[in-house]
Image (cartoon, rainbow, N blue to C red; front, side):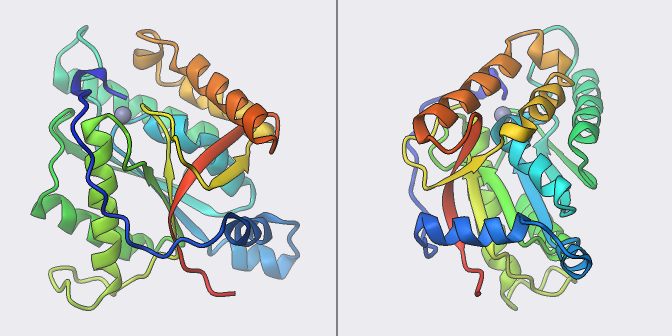
Length: 267
Ligand SMILES: [Zn+2]
């Protein structure tokens, strides 16, 4: 979350994927995470999760509890940071801040148990929906072959967050077809895309995850982003928001909510 790039630019709607009912995706994810036999454990380990974040810490704020839940179920979780958050403080030079924030992201990821981090190092506050970024994301999606992608919500007020949403969705579409020949990797169709809330709470969401068991991990992970938490208590904001979602949805003590962008798992 980098306050420097905040603006209230009008958001265009691009989502055109089929949206199933809440219950259906709930069943899919529940089955995905329930008690595992050895065979299922082996199969589940093949389930791959990829989260796109504009800045280091957005992933943990938006869906850290759900990601910790995936890790507990032995899913492979990877993160891709579009920028390294070099505009997130006035205390030091951009290059030095980017280095600090990448270190913080690694420490935060260790708390949750991510498998791999990718830093694309775009300039913080100036993320562009361009050819170079699209190619990188298509390549990454085809390489990581995620079953589930988490990404910023289209309705977020932060410009970098919205651009990340549009880039990821465009790349997911291009990665699935045979036409994007710049990439050497084979086409890959991502089954499920869930949009998380960070800067702007979601006013319409259609999936809720109970993360009560993982709220301590989420907050502990967020606190590894020391350079940000010392500016504003994002750890308290994330915990409070999760508690609010828990109370208002009635789905658990602490919850994370999402907008389903795509859900096409056949079962
Ligand atoms: Zn951010």
